[in-house]
Amino acid sequence: MRGKTVIGHAVGLLLLAAAGSPAAAFAQDYGLQPYQLVRSLQLIQDRIAGGDNAALPMQAKLLEMTDARLRAADAEDFEDPKNFRALLVYGMSGGNPVTVEAAASRATTDPQSLAIAKGIVAYLNGRPAAAIEILKPIDPMSVPPDLGAFLALVKGSLLATDEPAAALILLDQARLLSPGTLVEEAALRRSVGIAAAQGDAARFALASTQYVAGYLYSPYASQFADSFVSGAIQLHMSISQDKLADITSMMDAEREKVIYLRIARRAAIDGLTDLSAFASARAEQGRNGDGNQDDPRAVLYSSLSTVTSATIGDVRARLGKIDRGKLSEGDRALLDAAQAVAGEVVAPVPAAGKDEIEAADPARIHAAKPAEAEPVSKADAEALPPVEGAMSEQPAVVAPAKPTADAPAAAPAPPTPPTTAPPTVAAPAAAPAPSETPAMLPASAPAAASDLDPHDPTDAAMLNTRRQLDQIDQLLGAAPK
Image 1 (cartoon, helix red, strand yellow):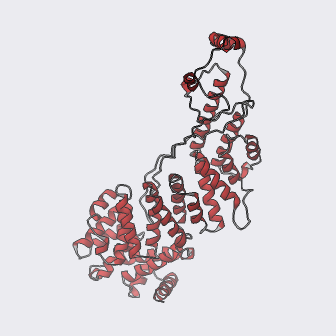
Image 2 (cartoon, rainbow, N blue to C red):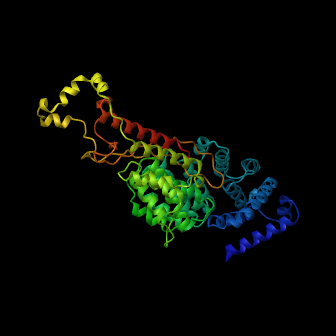
């Protein structure tokens, strides 16, 4: 009831402010203290975190009113510790660093509080090293909870790259001190990204489950989605597809489809054919009988995972039916690349002329005559290049995608995270084909390219197929996200 009462007061204040006087004069005329305005701001932000997007305009107006009141505050206002803590919370809630610095300079308070203000200003002005140096000695659990929650969140964000284990502890403290709030939403969102970067599948799954359960409709949920998709790719060897399905089943049908489409696309680009096939199948399957088989993205991504398979004819037919006009520019590039490779896979191998073969290696013709063929020893047989169409007994090894440091953005006013390099693209393994069909050779064949003779029709076909697979990998990797 108390929360509803404060929200009602906040709405009333906003309506009165909108009707007339400037924000600073309005706040002073009605005797509003900074801590009262900041508390109303926090409650509005908590509703936004829960999915109440209608409260977004109220947040903007309350930020304006609070900023004006704090700019007008004097030393007497800050004699009340609640008002100075409100100044610090305002700064960590998306406030103006100029206002925080100016107001703090007029305050007379304890050294630790002044140090926190200095650290917050450094954080908001994009000087993380200075902010860490100032704030690191201060324990968030030693200050009042309303301030400690935000302090733990900021410190956790600052330490995410250099000290991820310590960052996760701080983010847990933030959630403990402020459950069900925008602080918890941001802490969970950051935890997902840090756990993925650390390879901690259990922590990633737990934080993702908790976020989806509580904050799926937050306006910042798109940032969670980015971290979740990246984590599913990075942790594909340690998190099961069943666990991914458990987490996405808590989403509504449309969000679940979009998540699976994004995972399928990234997995196809990184050569993770099993994950791409799983995600694209789930995207096509839909929920409650409402399938997405006509979604051109689902068709494209599922085809990418089988573009060099033995069912290449079916894949080419599916690719040909995709409506390019319904795809993004990046997906059109993927479609072009997939069609190019599919065409090369079924292209006939040009036969080398007799004169060309003899000129290249006269001894090869002599050795190929049946009457003069010599018995092949076991050792020699093991050293021979693979027979066209034969499957290696060793499973194809596909290198996992290089982890990306997709650091979750701070909410509501984060420093800009550094740009990261795109993940390494791994070549998808091609399935074997019968020897009488056009050349369609395993990309994972054990023979090195240097062991193959470009003048031999079989070896030339293998080299050509490998070149085409390399080209498709480059095209896929270069396509915009």
